[in-house]
Image (cartoon, rainbow, N blue to C red; front, side, top):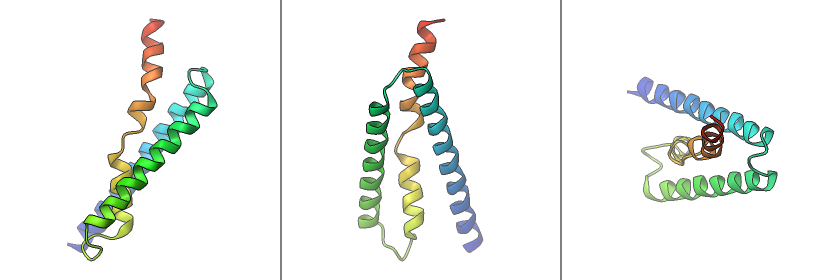
Length: 99
């Protein structure tokens, strides 16, 4: 059971890395095409961070620390709050407009 739990944590960490890599790639494309201003990108990142930490705090309050370590709760919070799909919406609209 410990091997399965350790591997699930590793899988979640890899998924978080992929999610954040996709978000950075989308942010670079948004900035490069001048679809969103720098200020809008920073505000969006701060709002996403606030949502992740709010969910993390809620999970820490609800889930006993004996059952699930804190770093797993943080990984779950990062994976649950949408980031890349919402950020990619302006790119999709711009691509569809010029097609």
